[in-house]
Image 1 (tube, rainbow, N blue to C red):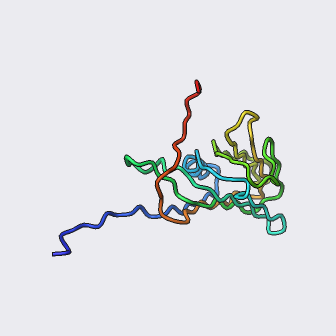
Image 2: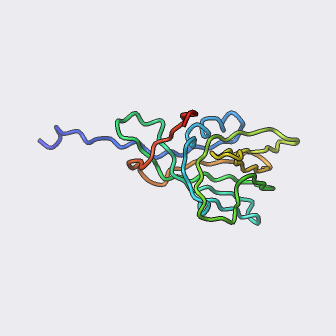
Image 3: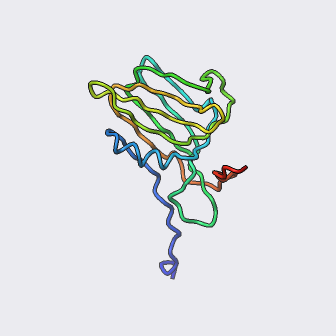
Length: 154
């Protein structure tokens, strides 16, 4: 009798890698509108590793209830980090990801640009030896407390 009831299937947590410029585009789409605090930005220059811990908006989920999933974006082989409009020491600042793009440099290196919402064109620029990026959900999606608003007139 219990076999007659189907369990509501939970979506599997995302785990995606990017090792080419073409691989970056789907990850950029999935992290668009991700929300994080400055405390979610971590750079380890010795290990050449940059990590963003955030709550991504689940654009891929077609439900009546908006969802967010806690996730981490790990970027490896980082040679240099520059920021514009973002104070990496200010741990309480609220940030929202707009896009991420990879621009090729010499010898297989890339400039990885993460653009955030804000009036100053907030941006992180990571110079990487090669593209080695991992996006990984940390838990199942939960009800979103906020929904992205891209209305320019507001």
